[in-house]
Image (cartoon, rainbow, N blue to C red; front, side, top):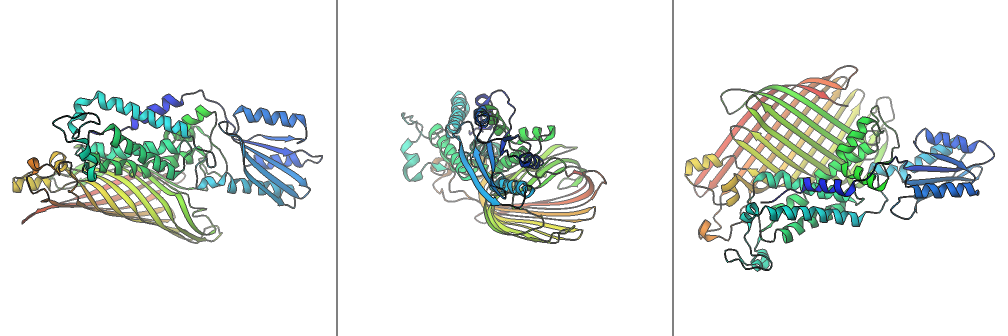
Amino acid sequence: MKYSLLPILFLSFFLFSSAHAAETKPLLFTVAETSDPWGSSFCDGLLETFTAPCLRLDLDSTEHSLRLSESRHSGDFRYHIQIDRPEPHQLSLTVTDWDINTPGYVVLERSSDLSDHYTGASWTIHTLEQNTLGRNALEPDYAGRPPYRLRTTLLLAKSMAWATWWYHASSDINTRDWDFTGLHSDEPDLRPQADKWRNFGGWRFDDNVLFFNSPLHPMAGAGFHILARSNHFGIWKSILAANLTSLFWEAVIEHHEVMSVNDLIFTGIAGIPLGEAYMQLGHFFRRAQPTPLNQALSWLFSAPMQFNDLLDGTGPIYYGDRGDLGWPTDIYSSFLLESSFGLATGPRDTPRYDAELRLDTELVRLPRYRQPTTERHFLTGPLSTELGARIAAGNRGFYGWHLTGYLDFLGWYRQDLSDDLHPQGYSAFAGLGMGFRHIEHDFDRRDRHGLLHLPGLSLITSYLTGPLDLRLRYRLTPDFSHFDSFALDDYRQTSGLDPNRSVLDDWGYYYGYGFSQALHLHADLAAFRLHYSFDHHWTRSIDALDRYSHDTERFGPNLDDYLSLTDRLLHHQISLSLAIPNTALRLGLKAELRDRSGSISHDSLSIDTAARELRALTVLQLTP
């Protein structure tokens, strides 16, 4: 039985990164002092944007060199920004990285001819935000800093060590999954280790409980991804680190077991959108004004980076324009906390009273997205991320929960919005995105799905004219899935047979391939918002890689005689809400339709099962 490493991972972070807190000032400005008041005026202009020291010193003085040296070795500053005025109408700007773990190196050098010092301050701010700090709109707040390779390796190794100890300490559980001899042993009841590697004979789907395979394995993969990202690795190297860690676990630690193909996919790939969406939320709140709320959110969504700051004596950078809550305005953000109450009718005779709590987050890092400007870009990187969760219960108890994560990482972006009191025009993005979704719901039977949305089409479009704001998001992706068979119980009752694959027989779900599409449309007009969403998932079974596909004693001589299973889920939702004046609250009504169907066919026998559920809810939304 596989084991999620996520709790161990964060415990390792805490143990390895524990250190005393230190106040940090990420930026230090030095401005050449002259006989006129230019230096003081320039610093005043910078302090309107940056919360950072600005020293006005004679660059040739011993005091200047001494104070710079003390600052360099204090560990209190990340960047040193030096501004000189070699000529009355000329400025030069040099940015040096002062990371205490690496030698200082020049990040940026720029010069410009200017008309006056006020323009000079504006040029300096613009240059810093666009070329040094502003690139964080697409990159994390440690962009340009070298990765901590040794620390990352040690933390991953510590995670593996903890998990290995648990794995062998719980041998009474884990030995049930042993199919192959050890690397240096010849257990008579197990297959030779060579059979596992010869022609990929031991590369199979495992038959663990669904909860281990989804969502715990994607969460473990997200943890590996977060570990590398928080230690200054880029997104692609973090993906590589997560997949190599997963491969090491499967090939070495669990060498007695089948090489679980589904674990490799769901740990190393499905963890990407979850981990990256979590990281981007962390970057967002670390860049926000350091209010108590934002600092708490920074710890919630970027705990590994916060621990690293404590260890290194560094901190996040606070810069740029911010909104009412101190959140960065150069990144489009959408947050929804919703509670809903209402009535559901479904397969059972009596209605169900429902209560649901939902949190959805979205960050779009496209340049100046939905701001008055004209843009034409082909972009790569974490361009858009979503992270969401919901939990539902009613008079029959707890009956469902969802976890979702999405990442758009490549595409073409075009925008044309006029600079007006009410921006008019359009914004459009077309590219590739991927995601992970875990769904559990109770019709008249348990229904669970773990869906890896492989890279597929992603569209984000907006149209603004006057008070009307239309926004549409659409995704179409191929899927690799863990899906409960909705028709399994009816198949057993009708045929009197058990399915001939182990994971389906033992736990009621199967591995499948298919597709998903999702459409979300909302229209804002004055205080009203109309929202419609449509989700469609379809999957078909994959049986040829069953754990026991070699076992003629268990399945008989006809090992290729598989069941054919298909399942489908359709979910429609429409809501109308009204903003409550002078608050961030909205009050509204919502209606949902959920259609679920499944089929099993084998030879001349075909079983089809379907169910439908309707819900009517009142909703209270917090949309900061």
